[in-house]
Length: 221
Image (cartoon, rainbow, N blue to C red; front, side):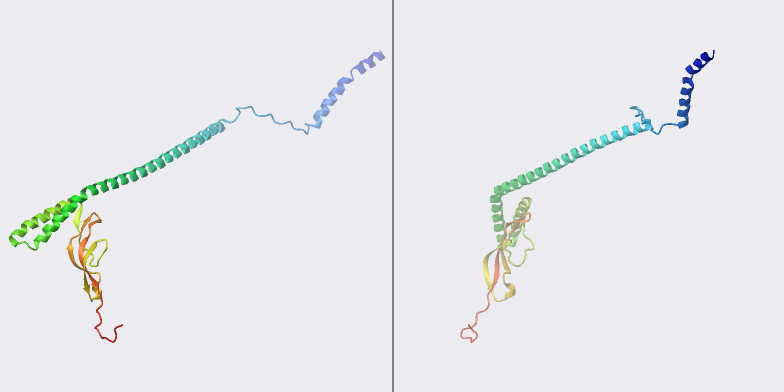
């Protein structure tokens, strides 16, 4: 009987051993190695974060489209400005060509009208008073016709000879240096077309000539 008891005791020893190991593991506490956290599954962000990301992406896309539209508008504006400058330059060239063409066609007729005006004005000083009114009427009508062609008599002309405004047809000597190149008389009136000279004035101008020393003067060179 004693042997049977020992055998049973021998066979039951492992159970207490396993229990002791479990108790030891519990007493030792958790292991020093911390397991790595598992990656969060896709789509686990908070709803607010997903909404903000979507909003930011939308704003960025809108800004890119807006920049593209701004560049397109700027390009159209620059192209339009260039076309406008080209059109204005072409218009000015055509306008200048038209004016030159009309000027060339009208000039002979306008010159004839001016010669008729000169004749009428020259007759006023030699016309009896009873006929003077008729010549005055013709002169005024001629001026009106010229005015409609943008041609007007010169007014307030400088007293000194101007090569643009005057044409000297005769010179009168003078010993007064202050009268040198001063207009002495207007022979024929000048006319302007716009701001340009259409016909200069024909004038008589003074020219200074120092007095000659008498013969035998000791100061004579």
